[in-house]
Length: 260
Image 1: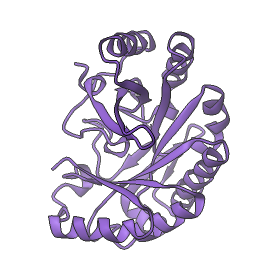
Image 2 (image 1 turned 90 degrees about the vertical axis):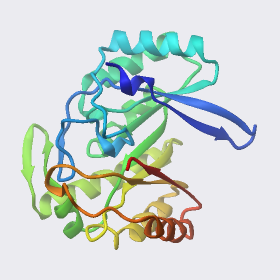
Image 3 (image 1 turned 90 degrees about the horizontal axis):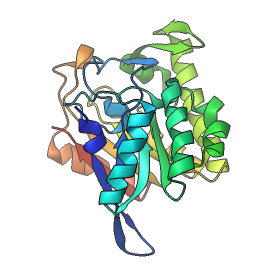
Image 4 (image 1 turned 45 degrees about the horizontal axis):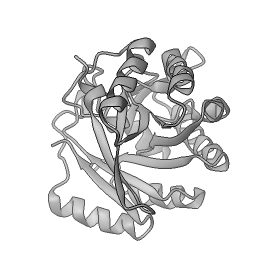
């Protein structure tokens, strides 16, 4: 089943007032972060993927062939993004796909969706592979909230369990990575999941710190969490609308993506 590769996201070119489409390729099966709202049984919500689906990761050859065929059929596809089902930067297949795309589809825009844990050390390689768009999942900026959201991470083949050290590593890697992306003229967008009672008081701080880096676009994600967060109350429409308006006072472009 290639459900994730079928997903196309529409976006507008503000200068041309033209609608284009973005093709997502699921080539990354492994993940280096255990989120308390995830079970690894479905696609990674952090990347903005539909958490109701489980995409079968394609091989690099399958992914590039699919991208080429899809773009041939649909001239509106202008961006090709590597997104899930796990963490793209934690999988060598991601970089193999980008190399192949550069060879056979050089005129397209390449994007990556990431949890940001490896972004700091891989920005240079992404730049060399002509990645222009980076979506970073950033759900909190305080150690306390981060320790509620995540159970463990993998860094240099070592597991760092829930701790201040884990939280500090996450936030430093994310913000250092985003800054390097911005300094390298990459477009950065932040994906933030809204959990009432967990990170709702963090969201404005997330937006403020991202704005300081020059981030101009944010996506607020709503979904029914799984794992340890299963059964957690999701924000109601009034709360979502209010939060979006508050975030727009900081970052002008705030979209809401709901999987409820």
